[in-house]
Image (tube, rainbow, N blue to C red; front, side):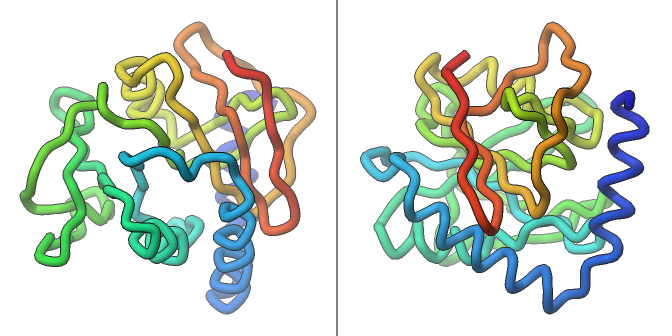
Length: 189
């Protein structure tokens, strides 16, 4: 399958999930995240879920990070420059749904990609080597290339891996994929 077909397949698979199942599976994923060897870090990048795309509800992981007194950064996408900025999530941070349906901070303290130690990455599909397929704009692949070489990347998925995915030169494989049942670990790129 090519990336377009994979996107279609996994969007359809997500569309079949009820809100109740999404919440149950998202909570199970958060419980699995607790088992990852990532808790010595300070700066964590966390995507906020696009509800109409039925993404993993990251609220549960956010609560864990905040409970552990971690600094959480949330992305704001600039579609003109095809880049993301990373805003420190604080109690007074105002989140608004962008014209693209993405929950984003309106303003706040921007933190450089070079400070980020752990990145939770959204995805549609992934394979047994840690390659992922996202929505196709390349925001996360470009962002991950700006991060420190030792950044830990964690994908969150409701589904199990494909055997292999078509990978392009700029695609950045992930270190971990967390599902409701299992943590997949991959060798560092």
